[in-house]
Image (cartoon, rainbow, N blue to C red; front, side, top):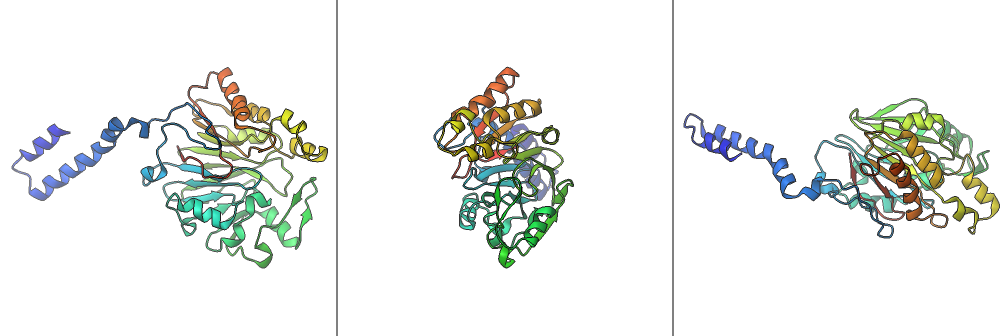
Length: 346
């Protein structure tokens, strides 16, 4: 870079304004290379993992503010677990939430910690109607809320709580009874739809809700798969998650802990059944089915506090990666339950 600048300075034919323009362009072009050389940990993703309580951190990841403005997709969990779920995803032209199962105040505070306001969101996309995924949508009057048409139809037909016919209880989201979802948008669970530069590809999953879905999200360059409430990995789920660069994947319970724990038999059966939640072993098996050379990150989500531990969940997934020779190139971590997770950049 110095030789380029010297040649420009020593060229008497260049006007001062043009000289300054060339020098500025040269510095800006070289800046990322210089920064990477000076601060390699900000740019290098380590594949090691750690378990500091409920903290999720891939060693070497930069803070989201450092990355703001770069052409990439970033995502992080705002919450993950039976008490509430929400995933923030940001591309070059879009900011969305997948699920809003925590309080509006908490969502606002969590987004604010990353320099994002609720009013900056382009959409909230719901996977299903359970309260731990929809709690705050009634208060998001400024933001379009995308919900499957079958779920909206059921909300319209039912004014009160209901049993959804699959053995589980569902409810209308807070505020919906009063028509507070002002920008309701319906989607078909079998049809992709677009939000600015993002294509959202829903796919049906087995869960005790009206029309539960998982999502594949892509900007045409990278693909992120999200499945957090799913009773079993069907062929459709496997096919939908193939080719992902990153996965947010449910790893809810350890079967031994579940069946020796405090839950009554009916709840144990609901959780472990085909319309409940994935065990660590099922999650790891699904990971093995969709593993490919381009997969970089796996974030294990929706862990039970009573029937699982981060160590057990990680152990199952890392075991599959080791057996397939991929443990050195795929980063795996656990989404924290009650705090904002580390920003993952793809």
